[in-house]
Picture 1: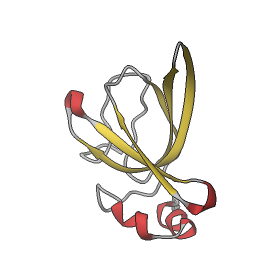
Picture 2: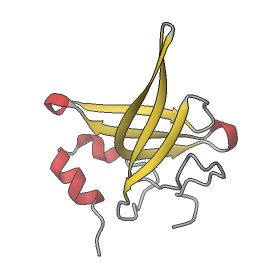
Picture 3: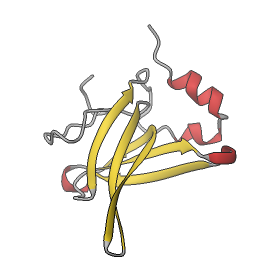
Length: 115
């Protein structure tokens, strides 16, 4: 699925994805003198910017039904890899901000891949 919605990155650590896809981003976290990897899995809410300023926002529903959003810079050295967990159906908008107001089950139904 190429086009202006998809992520065009030549880096092999970042998969090509578009809004509505469920992806898993692995980030390196520094705590004092220790380093660890943290995984954040959610659906792609938005892709913005271009070149070195390109970023994407992931959203997931955390514990007790509270939505959590996190924005990642593509060019960041702390971003280890991005993997596609599930391809969503092709979104009609490039920014899926309307999913913030929907319950989790409706979001899954709207983003679910159709055959």
